[in-house]
Figure 1 (cartoon, helix red, strand yellow):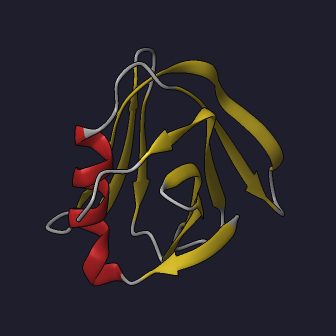
Figure 2 (spheres, rainbow, N blue to C red):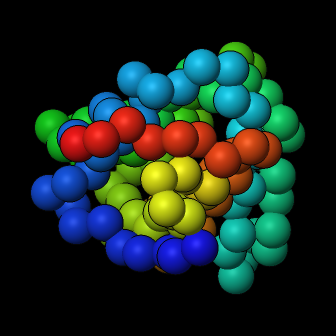
Length: 111
């Protein structure tokens, strides 16, 4: 397993690739911050997409029951093991950590 930081120039194409390969994966969304503590925003629901919109500078986590928007992401880290994605951590402009965990690792397509 290796967690690494994605360069902002990669965000849109990387998550477009990830979203195209989704097919019934379950995800949990957690917010962690010093002010709020740890909060689960959504527990194990169908993940429909992970999208970065550079025009509006918004990262969007789309699930069956929640459209979770993260404005002005500062850093994005992905936890990959070989060709599988386990989780994504988005740090917003205020330093809050938004963590998207996949119940089962997602096999990533080639670039």
